[in-house]
Length: 465
View 1 (cartoon, one colour):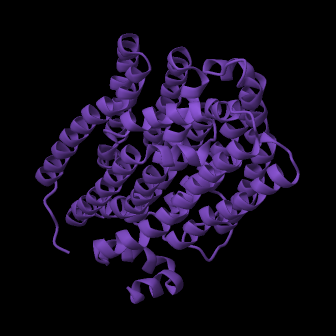
View 2 (cartoon, rainbow, N blue to C red; view 1 turned 90 degrees about the horizontal axis):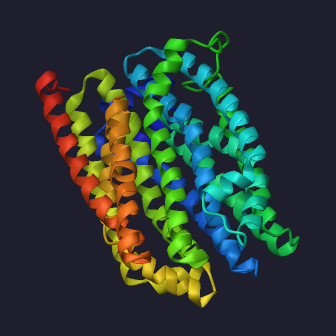
């Protein structure tokens, strides 16, 4: 383990990449996933701390529901950034495995330009049509002022978030997992310092939390981009790689379409859920879904960190034709992710009041959250496996299959359930849509994954290392 750490800090770029092909899989997964998990969990924690600080700093209980209404908008903005960033990270891993370093540089140069352009475009659209968009996502007369104030102040930071997290994945994919971890930790530390200062010290209200996010993301975006201006790093900006190549753009968009559609579907689902909750449970129910989302975020982000660590290992070894290492990495990641979400499911189901009380003080909102957590976490234990399965296909560049899996839970199953069950069972009908869709989509994911593994074994025999 000490040797692997030494390689990470002192080896030249070629040694960093050879490590992906030769080091023990379990050691690689720990090395690449542990920094990613720490980074993503810290990122989740500062989002959770934001919600706790806002919920306790501002006396009006409608502020929690107002923040909830902004989640689909921010998810959609994140999706547009991931359309480029996630596709770039996967393509770079694959072409590095194929020893095509020049193509990796071209992908990087093209992708950064597209990320900035798309970010400026959605920031303009969201800013102009802010009220209709928030109404569409479930804002009421009571929560709209809070939602509008927060989203208008946080929008500039969304472009920076896209640059930070998208190219943080590229940094990790090119052999710098520890440095990628520091990105998330930096953002979390700055936000945890600035948000309470602006809210409690300066009494800036909800805009203070948004400004804290903007400043934190500016610092981390500068940190990430500076990495790619350093010519001593494995992958960096090179003159001549910024001219747009449509074949490169298509390949990046093709792979990035999976996480993009996952987030778009999540945004659409959140809009439908918020409107259903507003109809059957009012603003208290919308506040309750904030508690659920923030709670499960911790466990989902741990799994995402595992997948981020898994991605360069899968991509490089798939590109190199080392399929035995591919399957060992998948098995280890899936088992670990399943254990994580089982813990989350049990915790949410048996300790709902303690969880809800962290975010709010209003008793009616706490009771709504207890009801929410008791039902929604029944199937959450299966989510870890499903996330790993989807990321397996994405890491191999099989965007079509990744897109399909990403849509099964949210579009194919969740939306029809939301159209049927709330009308028959009221608010409880909204909550039970979660475990039902989790169960069915996990079955589909398992079947597709098993078929793909058999297909790879049949079409490409395992190669001895």
